[in-house]
Amino acid sequence: MEVAVVGAGVNGLATARALVRRGVGVTIYEQFELDNRRGSSHGASRIFRLSYPEVEWVRLAQEALPLWRELEAESGEQLLQLNGIIEFVRREGEGSQSALEASGAAVEVLDPDEVARRFPMVAAPHDAKAVFQADAGIVLAAKARHAFLAGARAGGARLREDRRVDRLDDLDEDVVVVTAGAWAKPLLAAEGIELDVVATSETVCFFRLESDRPTPSLVDFKPGGLGHGTYALADPDYGLKLGIHMSGRQLDPDAPVGPDPELVEQMRGTAARYFPSAEPEPVRVDTCLYTTTEDESFVLERHGRIVVGSACSGHGFKFAPVVGERLADLATAG
Ligand SMILES: Cc1cc2nc3c(=O)[nH]c(=O)nc-3n(C[C@H](O)[C@H](O)[C@H](O)COP(=O)(O)OP(=O)(O)OC[C@H]3O[C@@H](n4cnc5c(N)ncnc54)[C@H](O)[C@@H]3O)c2cc1C
Image (cartoon, rainbow, N blue to C red; front, side):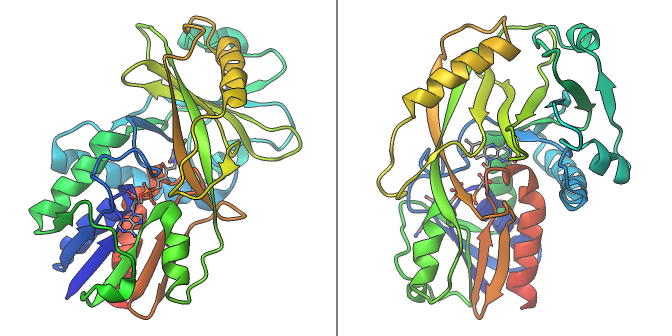
């Protein structure tokens, strides 16, 4: 059996590795170079967390964690740095505490003094409860993508870079897995498959932050029960990465727009509030694409010889090893 994987972001690479481990021949087609910065998977770090307000997402993250450990053992690379995550919760029922407890994960509520003692670089606001979960932090994203690729290549997978697939019919393989990120919607529409997603360009800022203590990941929530607001995480190059979930504008992925200056300004203020020892000016500003379903779930499904893998909604990286397994099952089991 031969399978084509369209798109060499984290999900395509994880799927290719899972497929070769099932004894399948795999060719990965990527329209740009492997480490391109045009999609959703570039950069050095992403948040890994079990902390989700819904039990099913907690359980999926619990399923992903040992699979990351397995990839670390296979590659000989450290891929997770688990310094914990703090959720700043301002409303009753907000955050992940009850879903974590229901899933058997350890949770602690820290007062601001305890936050300062454990994480001297974080200034906890006095109007919020700090819910801490230890099995969280970052996944080293670039290293993780390369580890998936190395595993796929070790099993015989081929990577074709600078090879844009315009029509899935052009591919001769028995099954085609589409992990094309923000480009998947038009590619699938040409095959009569509707993918109900919206692509947005999200701005992120990097700040220099020096500390001899490990930096935790951090999230707060938008007012009115609208989910995550600010998120922040350790960045291996500069110290701190910070963004505002779902704040970007819709875009055509072939016509990228640059960072949004208003959001950069907002992020400067937020960084100064939560991380007062960080340098006030961002050292780098970047963009990254979200491909989002209305309820932030993922689309993993099969239509004839086509398998759809759209797992982003701004939170898919941590789940890549599980998503790879699910897509490989769909591709091989029908
Ligand atoms: C700002 C930002 C912050 C995020 N933070 C987190 C986080 O903290 N934690 C977390 O878990 N997740 C996070 N995510 C989400 C996570 O990064 C994504 O879920 C994940 O990277 C999606 O990967 P993908 O492989 O599906 O898509 P992509 O990485 O976009 O890969 C798709 C690839 O397909 C290629 N392609 C497209 N069309 C074609 C074609 N026709 N022919 C050939 N190749 C094609 C593209 O060039 C691209 O390389 C974040 C995302 C962003 C943007």
